[in-house]
Image 1 (cartoon, rainbow over the protein chains, first blue to last red):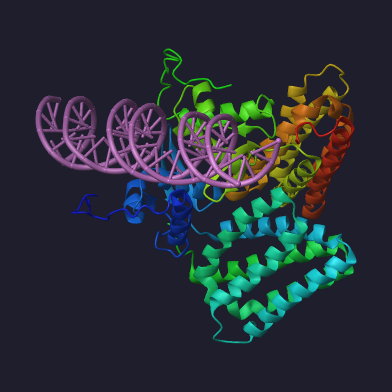
Image 2: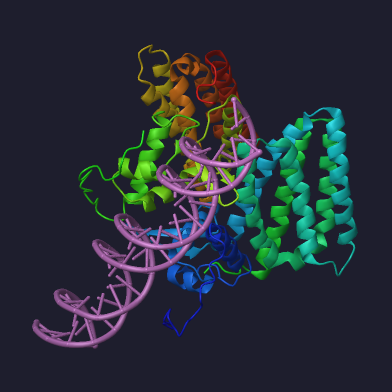
Amino acid sequence: MKRRISQSAASPRVKAEHGTSLLTAFREIRELIVHGRLSPGTWILEAELAERLNMSRTPIRGAIHWLQREGYILEHRNAKKSRMIVAPLTKEDANELYIIIGRLEGIAARGVAVLPAAERKDICSQLQKLNDRLEVISKDRDAPPGEIFENDRAFHRLIIKYGAGARLTTLHKAIEPQTERYWRLYASSIIKDLYLSVAEHTEVIRAIHAGDPDRVETGLQVNWLKGSERLGRVIEIFGERGSW
Amino acid sequence: MKRRISQSAASPRVKAEHGTSLLTAFREIRELIVHGRLSPGTWILEAELAERLNMSRTPIRGAIHWLQREGYILEHRNAKKSRMIVAPLTKEDANELYIIIGRLEGIAARGVAVLPAAERKDICSQLQKLNDRLEVISKDRDAPPGEIFENDRAFHRLIIKYGAGARLTTLHKAIEPQTERYWRLYASSIIKDLYLSVAEHTEVIRAIHAGDPDRVETGLQVNWLKGSERLGRVIEIFGERGSW
DNA sequence: GTCGACGATATTGAATACATTCTAAAGCAA
DNA sequence: TTGCTTTAGAATGTATTCAATATCGTCGAC
């Protein structure tokens, strides 16, 4: 259980470029969490991760705090020390997460709706293309979940890109990726409801075309709300994987 | 301009307890920013702050990244290195900030609206008390801005407390305090519009009493939206202090 | 005189060393 | 056996040192 760091020439520490360790650590640890290699509820040890990623504790520490601020990791404080654990995946959390994203994208969507008609038309055609692709995939039993995921994300990111300011963009970029954890866990069960999401997207596109801010905002909120409900049902069926 | 760190025995470094440096640094630097001692747009130097707060660069670094994530500090990336600057205060940013908070509190408000009637009644009375106090203050020309600020915050935090889940609470706690920067800059000009906010709060309380989620959510969104508009006008009059 | 290369210095990124505190296990006594 | 105390170790928090790079000024060549 206790592996000595210096087992032989353990890992020569390849020294990756310099200035990339923190970002690397963030991505790698996030990857471990998202893919469940670090199970929800697991205690996180800086030294262990440092060894695993072949770097010192310094960038690991930074990455852990970063991930904590973004919601992947929770903090248990004991006066002065703090232990970090991988955030559990629960139905309630998923619900709140989806609602929040829906509201945030709703703001951006409102921004899109008040753009000049010419721009809106261009955006609509881009959105339509993505949604068409989603519709095709939704009819393909063997579609790779990854592609669905990426197409859906692209759709929503487009809204943010054209309708959100700097602050909202940053916030969205921090929060939205967390859906991936749920997506990956329950992907197979979500795909069969994909056509519903496609229909909701269509409504959003229509509303943008009409230039109606309220309708666009509502449309996106509904998309995420329904998504939350669909996910909630799946979680109820399969149980909360990792909420111990 | 170039102060040597090792000026004599600069500061004996009192060694504050241990385990409190990061939090201290966060609070102190935030205070410097909020009070404008670190002007918007200013470049942030780790070493300088470390000297100023009598600690090493390590907790300073952590605090800076923390503040960055919360929106007080922006990052300018140059491939590998990154310079940090104090986030500018602009009309657009204030607008987006207020809208976001309005949406987030709107979610929580919805949660409050669906609580059992008995609980709602209790919450309403708490809210009413705070709002009554605000109304009294609004008629007092010489009311200390701090008290107004704190009362208003308390009102909104109460909504969060009773209506938001863990994730939303964390998010709100990270975002809402940023309003203080704008509040402090333009406080004197905002006070005279306070009675308007009081009226909006009253509507929120009524809606909670009625147990109508949509109405409560809308009420809070409107409160922040109008607040954003009021602030926007003040910023336009006085110019964007610190957006250079 | 202007442009560019070179170098000194300032500043951030990462690694290592040190300090402190929490945990838990072992020993001892009641 | 149970419960308290002590103590060794493990894990986090902070400081310090080392490394790499960006910046800016200066000097020289054209």
